[in-house]
Image 1 (spheres, rainbow, N blue to C red):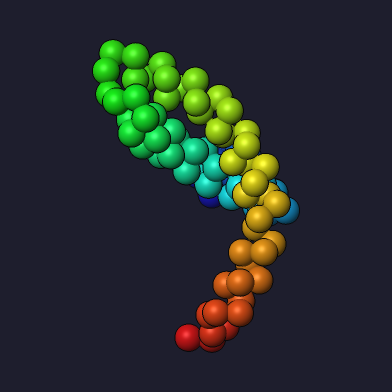
Image 2: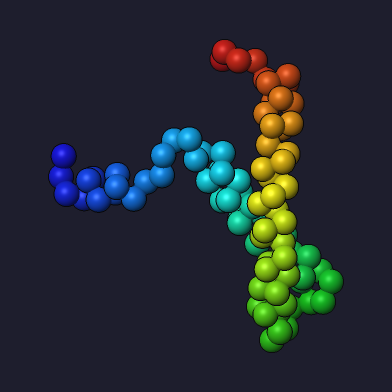
Length: 87
């Protein structure tokens, strides 16, 4: 094992954190995309646009994170009901 893989392995989280890491990244990406679109649709794109997006994101990101954590089990059940488990 080379030193790069040892360092990369050391910085990775334990597998048990997967649902939380998934929720964090899903919330972060979706909240940002929604803030970009909704801010542009509501107030247009001008010089204040980046600051308005970041202001909206401050509320949207933690809200989205909590929502993904709560909704994930339901979504997993719905996927299991609609997708064949093998092939």
